[in-house]
Length: 482
Image (cartoon, rainbow, N blue to C red; front, side, top):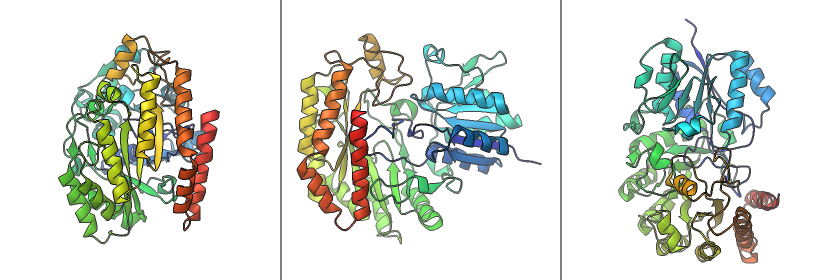
């Protein structure tokens, strides 16, 4: 019997981190971000392959394909089900694409994205979902298999598939049960990297292929702007270090990948878990042959953890410092202090571990003086790289509720991103003033002669890295002034 065919894809167009439900970063307009692997599609593909489907996975946006390229491929493949991974920013364009594909080719149409996590009816009413059959709001690997089985094979009960929306017999959109999560991550198959173009996803400095390894899901923090506690829960679900090691080994031995991004909302939250994984790497044939980067909070954090991570191959750690204002850190419920931000930076400098600093400005309560405190912190911490984004009120976050109450939403929040905010400013600053402050702080940091000389010195033996730094530097300046 012929297998049902499933197409999983990112559409052509601007590049977004479509697999990152938490941030959905705009890559084109950022300062030094590189596209990460399409693990959401990879996980979905692995689940479907295990269930006997014929699966095609395509990242059209990162391959810089055209709409005609995509349409020609779909015409040749003739899928029975298509799943597009969407973002809050691209949702309107993505729906138009899916509607067009439905008209051309028919079949079952699925949208996957954080926007569909237990959504308000008010938000759904803004979307033309007339030709969309299913919407997956939760973790895709815990839903796509059951959706495909029900839609294509008539198996199972759609009402029992958690964290999705579907159409009933009348065409009405119906929610299933939300706020439940799969606990056994070790039982999930690794992303189907045999279907992914792994060369597309690289380290920004070396251009070497870099795989994304999801080590844990969920976050216990209460940051007002973050979707993770909503989508993945406040209880951190860890994979076992042994399971992570098995995926690292597969990537290295089967695909020749030596660089990794450990994806977790806070990789270092469990120091004992990190210690076990790092020691497993150190005592394995991978030691000295692989390198990795990871996100971390400044609290909880131990210097010893950072030292062990560096020994195991960590080439950079990223901190969500967010703000240099004690008042802002309290208002955004970060659960960290300015002193802890400075301490994390100090430890990295002492250890010799490069680090990213991520900052957010434009919160509703923010004045220019608050943002100047963030600028001061940036220069005190002196990270190797920084990104400054503008506060974005996602549906479902308390930041959205605050912006709505304070009448700070300039327009519908859908279609906006971290560099093109849907807010009309803070209570004290216009959006133009916030954008100008962001530009001035970024330029003031990156164009320091001391910084430029330091980075040039680090690249004496790596000309290709220096060229990449120059490429991202030009991109930064162009983006800030276009």
